[in-house]
Length: 68
Picture 1: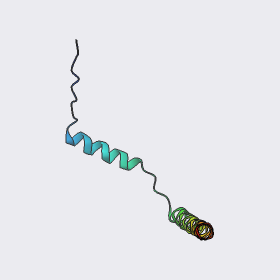
Picture 2 (picture 1 turned 90 degrees about the vertical axis):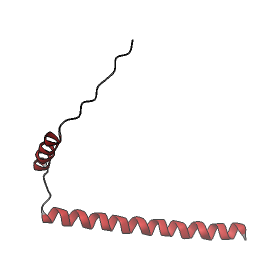
Picture 3 (picture 1 turned 30 degrees about the vertical axis):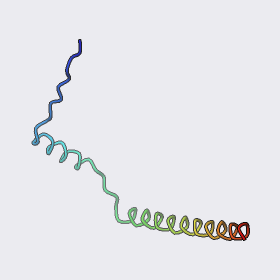
Picture 4 (picture 1 turned 60 degrees about the horizontal axis):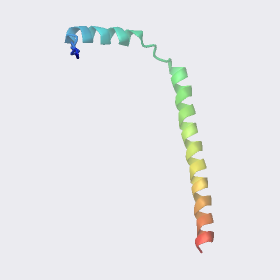
């Protein structure tokens, strides 16, 4: 009827070797790229935060007019 599936785990040594091999494949960004991307993320976060704050104020103002 049903066959059982056996999950055999790889030995820890193989896992560590595989992990080290994967870390060697990583291409880390240079300082200039990292700086540009960091500035872009921070600026985007500030702009998005400002948009959300303005929308929140507009909605609050609108609800205060409606509710009274």
